[in-house]
Length: 313
Image (tube, rainbow, N blue to C red; front, side):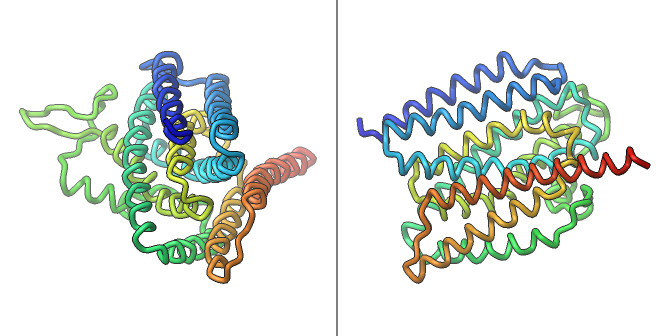
């Protein structure tokens, strides 16, 4: 087997073991996840993600490992923004904590399958039409600029959500409490509960985010193994991040700006390639880490300063 094939095999084994371990130990049915558990789960997934980079470094090449880390941390940062939308959806539909765990898991597993399909299509398109990378660059640049002016106080509005409106048209929906079931029967008819609605919304929301993140990862690398593995490992950590950040949504006021800068940088990185200017992967990794880490640190610092001012009055 080639080095790349070995990397796929090791990744597959790690993925199966991690999901089984996660399902068996971290995902107790009917039990809410505590902040301490969420922290341990998040550390587990991040260590697994970074550990796979170490494996790539020795099994493949250091350059691929750096590409993987850049793609992984960019996806991880974008996932935090994704989590805030998840929190709004769960809050709107009043999903109890004891059912949130499994519901998130099912939504994320579906999102992974759909992302694999999107990435595969993206790879085929780029192989046939290499100019599409520049289109991706323009999309990322526009998205990044728009994020600076986007409202941070948005709430989930079902009437403005295309996926929710489509679900209402296609399925019989019910507000009846179902104990976590996605489908119930009323008067001999099949009805779909709010748990089903949230399950579909989670996957649909992640697909919308993937329209930004997948083009961005193509700007970092066109290595199939790196793209698939970094994307999947970053998405698998979404559930633990949800419970870790659920009570801290308001503490990351400047994360949007950090992610916006990353998207603008990645978009420009794609576009300057037209002039045969190539930005080294180490610079890309540093920019991603500084922007995401810096925006989180600055958010926490500003919140601490605000609390001090409030306490002094």
